[in-house]
Image (cartoon, rainbow, N blue to C red; front, side, top):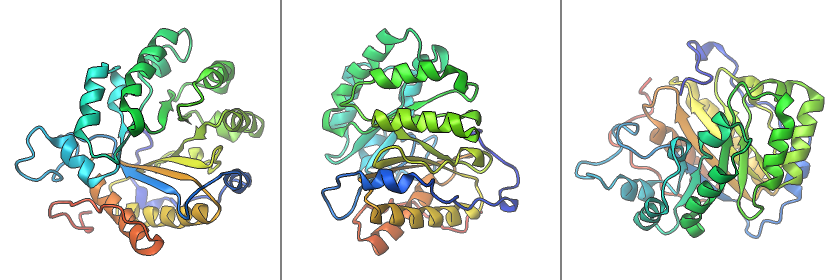
Length: 298
């Protein structure tokens, strides 16, 4: 992942900004049934080429089967590049653990190429396909191109307002003008909140302007990108502290996906966060078994 990549992460202030003043209000509107929020932590891909030194010898072509015993979710970026037939989705459903959740990315044909315009047929095909995930379907994830500016607000609004309300959606906007202009940002927040859509938080070293920390629903969708630097662990500790605060404030669901600029140890970074959630907040999440890797790789 090159987006937000920097050459000098150790020289930057990568601490989490304070929450937006409206985030606490939004979380207080939630109706959490349990003492703790549901939490999903995972990677963006499950293939061996990306998750090096993760799969034990003999895994063969059963990567998903093994991955789903180690993580409880996947940010399914594969859907960005093509709409898979229902038969493929059915196989993924059958091959994954019973409590596993898929978070399929909205295809680039809709978001990047057509930019949300005249894409009804493609959207229908996508929604039909992902419906075969059944109860394993998590939040869908719309990522717009960095050149998608607020002058296209009406296109975004139409898409969000017509999105089926029984399918959860999170939106990531990468052009800085969505957030550095107060009027535009407030208009965006209102649109997402009124339609129950999550406002994706993108934590990457080189784009701190996207760290709005403004939740628009009682759940969060966080895309964390490590910088291949020892500071990655400090940043995850900051996220643990924020998750604890949001949990106390009533958040219903936490969806947290770990990436890296150069994919080396996303499972190990995930394990670091999961261990703290288990030991300090009482979760019983599986800690990924990372073959022979240690926290001093950098």
